[in-house]
Image (cartoon, rainbow, N blue to C red; front, side, top):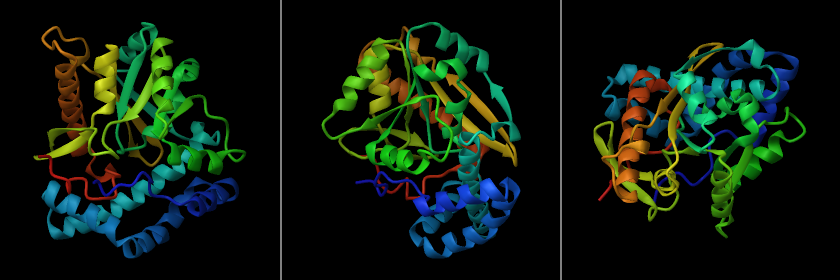
Length: 299
């Protein structure tokens, strides 16, 4: 089974602490305080630290010294993305600048009124993208684990501004399947994370960064089943206050070469992995999976 257990890094007390700093001391001070926080996490989160260190050392083949430097950069950037997320959700989005790649192509898909799947990953700061869908936001649904949904809702409710998108939580009674079906039947948009899985029985294998690993099959099988457009997207931090949004419309979603649903799902996965690899190589410090992603070898 994967080392990731459905809970992302960043405790409730940590979020509340930085919410306090943002409200009374500002973003710059919050960034400055991160210098002390990352030292704590490097020392007292040994599993996460080892996983990220080995990611730089073995996946990117960086030298020992460079891997150590990249490790600290990774923790610092992760802290910044959490602060940025809180700030943007809290109404401070004008303190940041943004650039968009292939944005017109995305709008054409959203305006086609056919529904759409948006597939991202735990790189960069994908969560901030929901704030920039404007009038499309009320048709945007973000799929996540129910535990994460409740954790975020309880933390941010009454503290930050209202989100302009909906959440579909994965539940044991499978009621989320009905919500997904209803959303796509109503030509709405659903955002998935394509890089983490919980149940090894619902995975597909693909070669990623030179190694064969497992990915969740849900996003790709759903796209194949409903025959809707798919867009891979990533919100990457380019500088202290700037984010670049990258949108990659999937060509496999409407290819005549792909015939069966299974073939289409595999083609979508391979295309997603190719795009994800491109992004990870361009922004190696913004890989935020704090467990051994390559531990579970596909067989």
